[in-house]
Image (tube, rainbow, N blue to C red; front, side, top):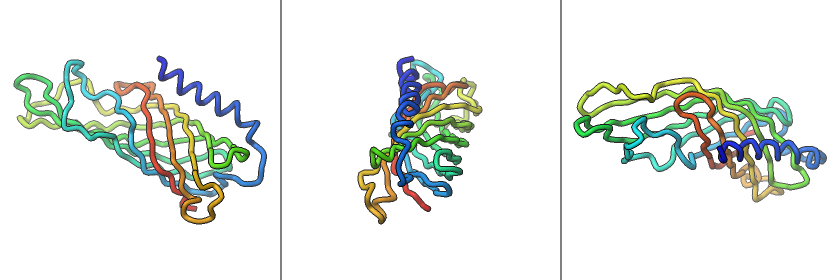
Length: 202
């Protein structure tokens, strides 16, 4: 509950700061610009349905990427895809199970305009996605657990930080991105974080 409250609080904070930062000429997210982000998950959500299970041989951080196109100076549309993998033993004689998750989503974001605080860009939005779950077993056993492929809905809030806001070259197009999302539906509910590098393509 505390993590969910944090995501909501970040969203309201960004809305509150927007009127203060909404003036100026330089727009960090101009209409028609495109952004590509390579990212990793700071934590994973549900691993296995067995609360006593101890996953091993796992991907240290879920990996993925996202793309965004700015329809206006504040509204962006795009998509995200994340990949996660781990192995586990769900029973004494069940053999090794390997779980693979692919989570594509359609993202809609609202960007605030903190021109008076150069290098910072707050945003909030929502993801409409689907979790594809693939499970295989070394002994060819059939998986009858609770983790299934399903749709999900996740509001999010985040910030872009560019240490070189005055650069006109490559560094000026880079920013560090931090995002917290709250998956509110299905078996994979919970708050999770993402961190990565964003590059402005156009």
